[in-house]
Length: 357
Image 1 (cartoon, rainbow, N blue to C red):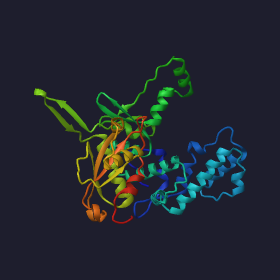
Image 2 (image 1 turned 180 degrees about the horizontal axis):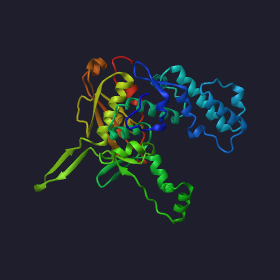
Image 3 (image 1 turned 45 degrees about the horizontal axis):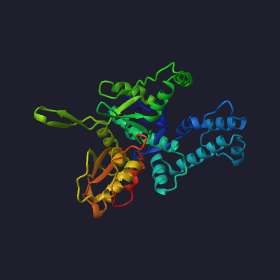
Image 4 (image 1 turned 30 degrees about the vertical axis):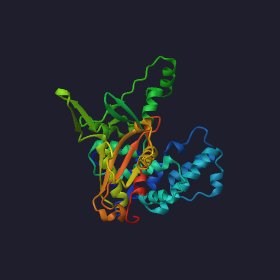
């Protein structure tokens, strides 16, 4: 793969991929080897001799067949299951030929038989590929939302998305590991979360620190300015995190389905001819379904909506005939704990395409 002038997500395994004529990601031994560095497969002091031998042999020859007897020799049941899952994932990936083909086959099968950690790893590598020509740090940060859950907070009128795992770790340990956890529990240390809102001024830092997931993404799309005589002015922000997310989703659909679409954030749906919608997550799917069916939605659930979007096809003939030319509405919402968990497969499985891609 070519080297991005601002390299990012260096642990995505992207450097171990090759690109075919379609621009899709072909896995190599190097990519599979990078997956063995994941915490789920890392050796621990308690690892038995059989597990150490298996791990080292896979590092040496990532695509080697593993006989049942070799796997069964691993004493720890959880470790044995982790390796079995990894091998099933590896073999499916190599059989599909590309990460894109594997992901589409897996999601279209309706039988997802690998854990979310491996699926998220594939999505990250796919996004790293399709963003390789992107020099917009906001888009790269927005793309993290497709494979890392985000905690949404509102501060001084700003809607901010922060990486859930990073925020939780900082809240629990102040970034100081187990020592920080003990100090927080004893009251000797107050939690201090050092996270910056990503802007044009600090974008250069994002490229250098993207693996730390310390940057907050401002999802505020519209600013309200009070004028004289009781008037208010609403200004749409051209550089909002939601606009960046919309650009990433456009790239995602084009790369995976070969269909060009335009996606724009909106605040409400006023469409008596509403024909099609896609929730980007479980919560927004349920909310949009209720709204479409005129089922009352409690105010508390409505407040979970982070944004709505309109999606339009550049070529309406690529849509189903009964909805050709109509907008598709998208939703993004948090769960009850204020967390957004985007399911990027929803856009690939649920668009009203004229034919399967």
